[in-house]
Image (cartoon, one colour):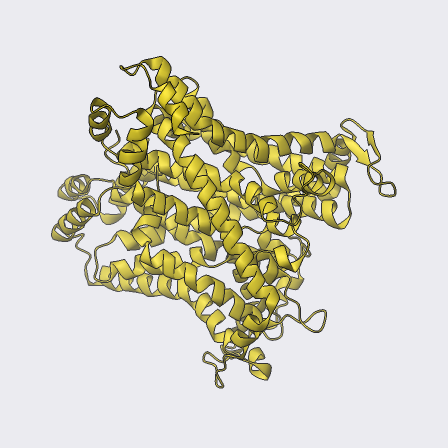
Length: 305
Length: 310
């Protein structure tokens, strides 16, 4: 059992923060100025580009090419136009189905694997973990190329996977599943063994102990893994453009790249900005609401060893 | 896996090692099967494809060429140029992300009011859709109408008329900048997690001994942060080596931004060269794997620790 994993209860973090505050790093006045300068720089660095996108999305016509920091004639035309554009709304639906589908599958089978890796004793454990984790290093191009050939030329039980939902969900698992297993394994290791042992003594089977005791306790871990899996799948680009051919099966990331203006070299700036803001705001909201969970997931295992 | 099977596995009243092993096999196999189908098999198939030459005129017609496609790849200047571009991008962007990420992590670690806000703000770039940000940088760095040039002109700084994405070097700089913006905060979070497990008493002791802030940073923070730094470097390096969406959206690979993934993609989809394209995809895979093995030799203990903790 690791006691110094990152995914520690919030209480402990708070006490530590308090302790630190009491100790005080004692930066002098110069230090304080430097600190706040850094804070302001970081905030501007992180937020300004996104602000610029919002700003652009509210501009129309000639104002798009101006450097105004605020839209002088704010308008929601870009937003109404993207929601009238069926390619965009369909892409939203496709992304929800594809990212959601791969997340649910990964959470289900990934939690089984993670439980075994965290709790059970068996041979080749290190090898299995190494295999699972090594798939996260696969470049998507090395998977997209052969899958494109398989999806287009071979049928599986008379079913072509090219340009379909399952045709995206399956390959998304190559990166969603290892991520889920990795996060869940470190979460399962945090759960005290005694509770399960008690259930086992009471006559529960291992699987019942897993389902009735471990899974509920690991709920925060499942939320974390699910959110990260969803965000990674939502962001996926290379497989999305390679394995789809029509607007009705293109996820948002691919759809945005295919937005074209009336002229060949014209970028429909306003609508792209509006589309990006639209699909990003829900993610930012999720990330801020579940901030602690997400940070715990992103850093799971990062400070071990 | 059904509960029934698991029950069978656990039938012996005392959990024998055999039943535990069998349950483990049931639990792990769905994941392994999925990985075999969607990752291992495609890679093997890519290798198979890369050993053939495919006819453009007669679809389905192919001819075994052995390592011919690989020979063509490694003797072509395009491959080496893509490799060089990929490594230049990786080294510079990961280095900058480490430096900026470390700075941000130290800020987030410092005790001040409103620290929680900063920690939330830092997550924003990470949450923005990559393709969307690429589009955004493309417009910001537009030569005529872009915000970057307008600011430079307004401040009467040199370079206000730079064609950012239209020339070698500058295009790469924009690509690196876009990547650093998106991922330095991620690096910062990993490093912050590392900072949080360094006990405060170590700093206290050093302070009592009269160590300066800089001395404390170089003799305590950096050495104790080493594992977190290595993990963050692995994550970012492997991601950077596979970079595809940024050059695809920003420049379509023009002006010295054709990375390995993008080059392989262009050969496969635009030029329909399945054999040579697959060879490039496999070479990209080999390069990424080689780098990750190097790293794992450095920090192999981390994964082993995760496996051995039971």
